[in-house]
Amino acid sequence: MSDVRLKCVRCGKIELASTPAAYQCDGCGASFPLVDAVPRFVDSEYYSQSFGFQWNRFARTQLDSASGKASSRETFFEKTGWTAQMLAGRSVLDAGCGMGRFAEVCADAGADVHAVDLSRAVEAAAANLRGRSNVRVYQADIMNLPFADGSFDFVYSIGVLHHTPSTRAAFERLPRLLKPGGQLAVWVYSSRLRVFIGSTLLRFVTPHLPERWLLRASRIAVPLYHVHRLPIVGQITSVLVPTSLHADPEWRWLDTFDWYAPRFQWMHTFEEVERWFHDAGLVDVQQGTFPVSVRGTRPAPAGSGA
Image (cartoon, rainbow, N blue to C red; front, side):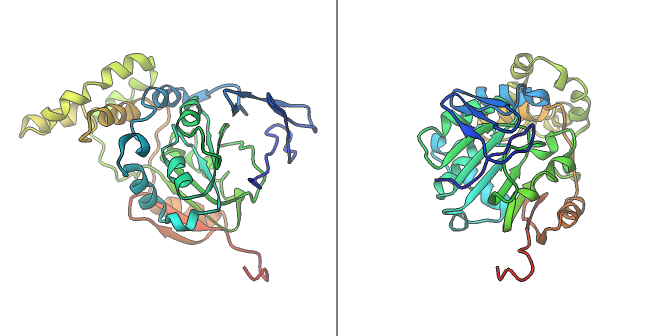
């Protein structure tokens, strides 16, 4: 049984009453409905609509249990620096779960997983993780999460914060959710990422296109992969029309859409993100092997013996 306490996102009251149809706040009277068994703490996807579309279209592409591979597992542990043994029996928050690829990894490790996304991706996540008693999925805003402070042993956000209106502001909502001694790990796009001019120019337009149009256009990544790999010609096409070079055709179609669709897409240095960790009072801040992946620990109170 989870000991994570829910909080009203309107008045801040801790502990919500649960009914088969909704969570109710006795403080302000707010009601948060369960739709398809997922509590909805927002009434809109706001800026994240492309992700709701994306993850319901590519609901199982990156899911290890569907592919029979360990790609998401390897990515998760590389970007967090954690191990499966560390997570067993611990409370874990996935802040931006998408279709649940990393929540599945944590669930397989035996963690008590709480997976949140602002978009309708929660519907794909709930379907992918159905039947796992140690996973709960919520639709909520990372800027106003429905959890009491000090709820989690581990919090992670992988590839999500840089797609919010303010990466730092979104980051600052997470440290308070850690228990003393708890760890936070994030991964954001590096400002040293090589971005071709074609990509920059196309993104002036692509986030404003209807998702279905952009999905069809992004499928060019499937055949263009072979052109990009040609000598001379490929050097030109990869600059003018950059697309994913993932070996799996479905994955590179997804990755290309994922690059061109988001409304917000910020990039940061390790030094910048490291400063956020220190400013939030986190200690033992470490740089991961994958840029820009960073983790830190919430210190235990002085004299606690922890």
